[in-house]
Length: 442
Image (cartoon, rainbow, N blue to C red; front, top):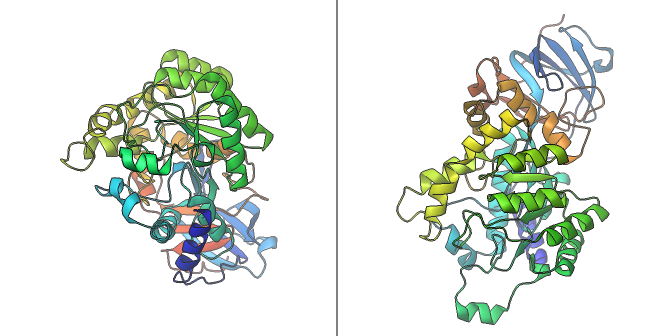
């Protein structure tokens, strides 16, 4: 399968017009600057960028020594901020009424071609980094992006998520008896475990395949072809074996979880983050605060599936009641978690909803009672903390030159995040709807 994906991506990039995405020396004259450390919106600043890094950040629009000879980009009517990070996406697919049959009809090359388009949409929406939590295509897409062959965000790839037999990530759910007998039961290589030893093997297999992060499905899920959306599906010992083995390889562990008991087991076992968290109890929130566990709500996905559950035929009938019941609750849970002081990182579960629509999550978080500055931090400096990196998420000298711009003031009007007009990643300008106008000489 891995080899097929490599061929698929090679075919994809052949039609992607792979120009040399070279970083240049530029000065950005920003009308306002979002300071993600303080959560405050600052006045006019000049940001100097060279060789993919920020070299200086100074107030006003004067000259900057490090930027001598640099091209000047006029963003004086815009707010500059660090490029956003979405901590929960699936680049290999996108929900549709045909999703449940496509795995039988399409080839890996089809999913690879699609992922190239999804990656570019995500980048152009202002997301310069993503954590892809499940999908065999993502490690290969990551490599193609890193090599400058296609346009897309920086990817932390989980590869195949780890599940239990019949669990949310079991790839054979819904197969008929004949097909199941023909293929045989999936095991750790396919991401399905049933013991502590299996758990260790599954993590090592992800290491062998080049993953950056480990994802487990600690409870049932909404879109899997199975009845339960919230039952616990791992023992504490199994999750702990995943976490301990992951730590050996420098991995963090994200846990998909809707049900209370599954969340509790995952937090006690030491996972880095809880994804979705629909039925999160006060006890679980308290445990997460004690353990420093992150929460990634994915409100967009919840609202999307709840809406689609109203449409006859969009989901299989075994999925439809779960989508209607669970999806509608996530925003309320996120509101309670914020009030309780749980650490929150930005994530959408995009691939459930349409790629490129990621920024709408900001609006839903604000609707849930989170301040605009807080939600912007959740996708910048807080997301970097959740990933365990310190070279992005802030606009400061020495950090990656991941910079985006939106018109107006996103603190006063959060809907401005839907109108990203400038995107720079690693010092390369990928989108400039302002038109590359040069600012007048000071």
